[in-house]
Length: 292
Image (cartoon, rainbow, N blue to C red; front, side):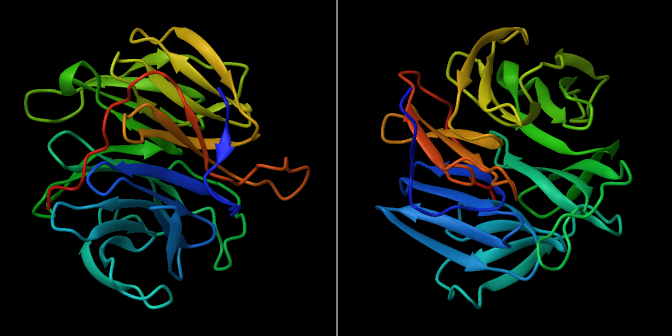
């Protein structure tokens, strides 16, 4: 695959890519830079916040959700860059000192949010991770919050295989991707290890293709791993970045893979911190807008 950056911009911690097929636009965030960004018709626009932001997801109403450390907010996309207009939707995780990390919407447009201990200071610098206080929460279109899991380390990846019968999610502190059956009452059943530890990095964010294979960004591994539906390794895709953070399918044919990455403070590669794109020849599944 031929990887190219979507722009000349570099970020400390680019994350959470979302492809909006309605507007043919790419959304992502710089968690440590406190910015939400959108690429539309070749132009990048951003909105600046005063706290970490981990996801940027458009809604069916035409605005967008941003998952900030203090809660989940609606963002008016017409508001100015330095003064974004925010309205609180909910506080999904009530644990003091936590922040949102992973967030994706399922096929019903419900937001699933994974949290962790906040590991960033007021300037976006690193703080030590000292506890497993994260959780997984579901936010319905009416802003109703349902807690699903607690005691999580660093929640990454939110995918729903088997027509929504299960949740795939990684705990990066454990180095594995888990599979949870979704029960009749929408609660999560007993977990099983779906993809084990691998020498090529730690599991971060993921995307699913139309064949049910999972493309997982490997933090510190310089690659993506494409996992088969049974969790076995199908292939390893090398990348020109050291710390890929997540990926999403998009483009006019839904066969372009976009990959976000982080830029380490030392020994960074030329493209570290960029958002990459490449044509895969494989069609991916569409991102879902928030239904509220």
